[in-house]
Structures are given as C-alpha cells and as structure tokens.
Amino acid sequence: MYLTIRAIVLRVTDYNDRDALLTVLSRDHGKLTIKARGLRRKNSPLIAPCQLLAYGEFTLFEYRGMYTINEAHAIELFRNLRRELTKLSLGTYFAQVTEVISQEDLPNPQLQSLLLNSLYALSQLDLSESLVKAAFEMRAACLAGYTPDLFGCRVCGSQTPDRFDLSAGQLECLGCRTGESDGIRMPVNVAMLQALQYISGCESGKLFSFSLGEENLEKLSTLTEAYLSTQLERGFSTLDFYKSLLI
Image (cartoon, rainbow, N blue to C red; front, side, top):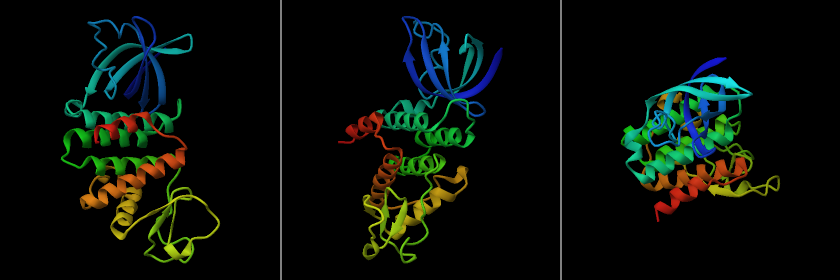
C-alpha cells in the first residue's frame, strides 16, 4: 500500500550504515516514523528532503508494519534559518517540542501549521527570536491542552493581576495567594498579559503580529518557557544548547 503525505522532519536517527529513521509530522496522519533507505550514502537523492526541519512530499510504502520512503521531494528547506546557528538551534527546539506533544497517527494540522509558521518567521521575517520563541511556546502549550486562564485574578477577579502560577496556569494578585497551589509564581505586567492573551486566542496566521519592548519580550520568553516546561514536566536539550549560544 502506498501513501503520499506532506510532512516536516522532526528528527533523524541513524538506523544502520546506509539507512536512517525519520520522525515526521504530517497534516492528516499525525506523527509517523518512516525509514529512509540509503539516506546515509553520500549521493543519496533523499538528503535534501529528509534533513532535519525540511518540509516535503513523501510517497511511502508499507512493509511489515513500517513505512519506507519510495520517493521524496523538498517543498521548503528554510535556507535562511540554516545560515544562522542560533536560529537553527531554536528551530530544532521547536521541532523537539512538537515531537513531544504530537501523537502517532493522530492528525494535528494546527500543530503542523504552528511549527511551519514559526520556522518561516525565523527564516523570513525580521522578528526578534524572543518574540517567535514566546509565541511558539505559549501556542504549543495551548495545543497540548494546557491553555491558561488569562482573564483576571483567580481569587478576587481583579483585571490587573501581577502574578502567574506556572503549575495552575492562572493569574493572581500579590496579596491573593492561597494555599491551594504551592507552585512557582512569576511576575507579569499589563503589557505581558495582553501579549499572552493575544497569543492564546488569535488566528494562527496572525500569531506573530504583536509587539513588545525588548525588556518585556525577554520576560515574556522566560515565562512561556517556564510554563511549557512545567506543564510538560520536562526540559529540552535543544533549548539548553540554544541558550548556551546566547552567553
């Protein structure tokens, strides 16, 4: 049986001296593991469409329960992103997050669109890496089922809360902290809160159409990173590498 998909490569793993296994995310079939025969050979025609973060069209055939690539063509390689190590490493972090929150054989077109749009923003748009990172992290958390409550203090209902509970995904005023959650709170100001509300609720095509001052962008990026990590209960080696490049 043959299957044709459009997918983005999330991970490439050596299988043997000649072949590799790809983890890809497709629009209609979710996350798939596929075998790329001969990919590790020097002149393999699969090298371009099967590289990490490549978006392509793959024709697969199924044999003994595993999909193997019969033919592949690159649609978008995000070449500008690959010219800058920090952007490439940030894109790799996005791919690792996507792999963690996606599921085998479960369609998730919104998640694929988020990843593609985020890579495009890094590659083609003149935007701060912190802005793209924060938008991706918060939207990824929402798509993974962790949409926070961003409309008022959970205790008194005030529309000007100044703390965000990373574990509960809720807002609080400084004087309203209760014993219901012993999670970490991070400070949030009005500008950051408006950005979070926008990211969580806007149309996918307008995800990066907001602005913040540099200081608030850095704070927002720190908060969204901490929130995603807290909800997923794990860290990311690719994020650690990206941050090491900024030192």
